[in-house]
Amino acid sequence: MNKTEDAKKPPKPAMGGRAARMMPGEKAKDFKGTFRQFCRYMGNYKISVVIVMIFAMASTVFMILGPKILGNATTLLVEGVMSSVTGIGSGIDYTGIANILLFLLGIYILSSVFSFIQGLIMTNVSMKLTYKLRKDISEKLNRLPIKFFDKTTNGEILSRITNDVDTLSQTLNQSLTQIITSVTQLVGVLIMMFLISWQMTLIAIAILPVSLIFVLGVVKKSQKQFVAQQKYLGHVNGHIEEMYGGHQVMKAFNGEEKSIEVFDRYNESLYTAGWKSQFLSGIMMPIMVFVTNLGYVAVCILGGFFAANKVITIGDIQAFLQYVRQFTQPITQVANITNILQQTAAAAERVFEFLNEEEEAPESENAITVNTGDAPDTELNITVDGSVQFAHIHFGYSDDKIVINDFSADIRSGSKIAIVGPTGAGKTTIVKLLMRFYDVQGGAVLIDGYDIRDFRRHDLRSIFGMVLQDTWLYSGTIMDNLRYGNFDATDEEVKKAAKAAQVDYFVSTLPGGYDMQLNEETNNISQGQKQLITIARAILSDPKILILDEATSSVDTRTEVMIQKAMDNLMKGRTSFIIAHRLSTIKNADVILVLDKGNIVEQGSHEELMKKGGFYEKLYNSQFETA
View 1 (cartoon, rainbow, N blue to C red):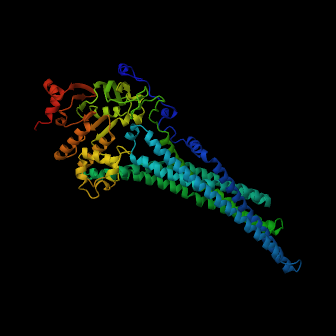
View 2 (cartoon, rainbow, N blue to C red):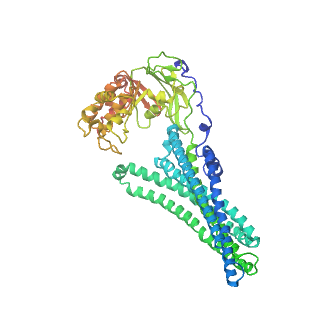
View 3 (cartoon, rainbow, N blue to C red):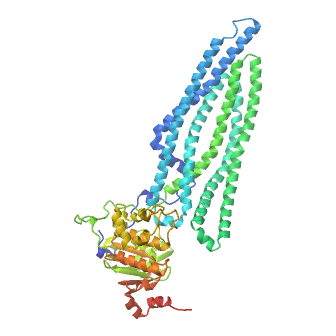
């Protein structure tokens, strides 16, 4: 357990398993790797998939037997007609034909039953897999570090959850069984054709190499376009989501032209990739039909010759011609499926690329928990008092972008600490390190002498309450948004926190009161009211340490007075970190930490720092200078 005296020791390396060491995008553009991972996902449903394969093959086999049985009926009919014409024989055997047709009907019914059952099972499997994928993506989002969201747009993530997962679901539901039936049909039809006439079968087979050459050539070119299509679809979605979310800002700064220019560029790329992929997949069918018809004509000529010489019966010719059609049909289907599979492969790569993203370092089995009851403290279950120590912190978002250099500070429990400095000095970064959104690269952050890396993240973040400049509320009632700070709180406890935060006053004037529904953009209440709700939410969570990041910067003076009063109630008895640009709001702080370029250049009370006449004094007076 790291105590205060161990603070200067170098931090232990971040713990991580296989997932933590995996590089983002490691499997991108790797079809074989994606296919293996997809098969692992399908492993939970292997019994169902095997049953589907058996039923699909059985259904197809029964369908394959149909033409041969129907050919026997045709032969019996032709022989009966010929015997009637020549006067030799007993004429048409209607009973025999009826028995054959009834048997054929039974075969087709069995085929349909098997097909229905396998379709039902496959639909169930595809829906379960889709559910699991979306569940895994949702859980993955909660395990990803903040740096992932810093570099990835919301639209890109949404595209993978919706478009790419839907593509996988549709392919699994439709194409997998079609592949099984197509292969079974191809093999079965080939066997039946050889049983009828090996000479005509060789002619039908001769079209395969020609078809294969065309299919492989088109597939090779279209695969790149399908990958590009999925990529630019994500870009378009991301751009639209960003522009819609910031529509007012975009219009305020006359960014319509630039936004349209970017959209047009992405949309043009998507159009080009989509057009090429669809064109290349579209020309497969005409080519396959043309090649198939050439083989069909050759078979008809040879079949007529054999029938004239009584080598085979007319019924077998009829059956063989049906088999020729069925023989080329699975080839055509496989050609079409290959296009779908290419798009699916591109979607699967994007989904599994996301699922393979590097996660937050896993927590130790001996992680510290926070004692929230009256139980006595133990080594791994402690009651937090609220003191904070920064011991020689060194941190950068990247190796060439160091933000914090050798930052050290000792904060007593219950103190009110203001962090000030110019833009880019590292103020908000300190907060991110406190909450362990990022891990330090040198030194340690400690709470009550314990390294924050020894806490469970859930317990660590339960110690803090945050009120940020950018208020976050969601579509729901005001009561729901307040209770987000403590889901177990009663209505009375929620209202008590609301009164302490000056929320109860304005809520009573709103239609519906606490049951008023906030819209999706939460713009049916004012910015100041939203800020007060976030303060009430923080009060309800009853944190040991409070973080206020520019909480009053976007409200008017009258509302600021109300918010300041609410924050004073919130800060009572709590260690508080206040980040502010308006230095007049933090004059009563116990300690002011003045940051510049990642270092503490000064610290002390407002009066002490003003007397020094240093960096803080210049920063403070600059806010009152006139042009």
